[in-house]
Image 1 (spheres, rainbow, N blue to C red):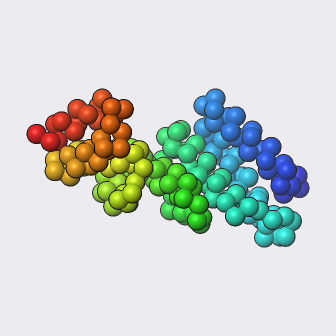
Image 2 (cartoon, rainbow, N blue to C red; image 1 turned 135 degrees about the vertical axis):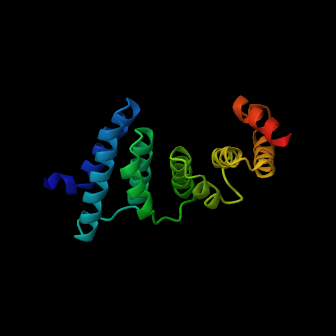
Length: 169
């Protein structure tokens, strides 16, 4: 098992997990991302190598994405509670999007609305608009859909366009 502490092995193991994720093996991918993250954290603690600052958070995002894709909401909730420590906007946005999708898919609309910053990505804005629509907050849903329409224009999903129309009237 000492090979698990080798940073080069971690790269290969991550490619292995990526491949499983691409073919739908979400459980194996999530487990492998978690294992890689654990071993790399220990390797760094033991001084066996220096990691890029976003290596562990990046693996956490990949693990969360795999858990979400596999509908493994229990382990995903535990992982989301841990959070990630990164200053990289892309990783933060990916984490926030996964969180929003998790809350939306588990019916926790209050958390979707709580955690949606004003400068959300179109995906998060769509999730927020759907949550407001589901709560029958017509004015809020219409405003969110209007903002989404301003971002996406003609590419606005048909279902979102219908909800926008219904919320507005």
